[in-house]
Image (tube, rainbow, N blue to C red; front, side):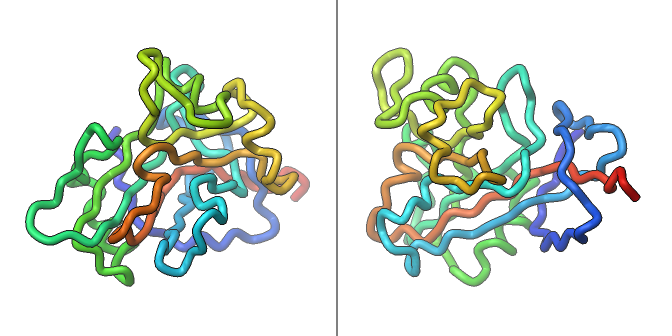
Length: 201
């Protein structure tokens, strides 16, 4: 099943509670899938304020085998001419399925170039969720991209210590996407989460 990610303003009534996440495209029983979205405007965000670690209010739908979250993340940069989304920087061209969502998310920033940020999975995921400073891959190279840091994937507690008690999970951006440079405009992400009806009702 192909996910089509669009910007959705999620207003959740108090009678809805987060529940256990599903695997892949299969939501947990009794749950509906909604989306969390956010745009970090780097022009108005003070440097060093922790934008590279976005604590999350709800657990994300993710594959418990690979650690991949049901997310798409994007980086907007001012650019003229060719829009270069170099794989070496952990970027790739925005897929056709995500273009509508990108237009909505970045509409107010008017970027010249938007790249999709690669999600870190597989063997490199262990370094992303455990190493506090400068995570490296098996070859000793700096990791580029982002990963979902949650309690069920061997998370180093140091990575989530600054998150609120009810937000002990986050998206962690590494490498190029975490090092602001001249012309960088913002980061945006869209992630699926499951919400269930309050069992007490």
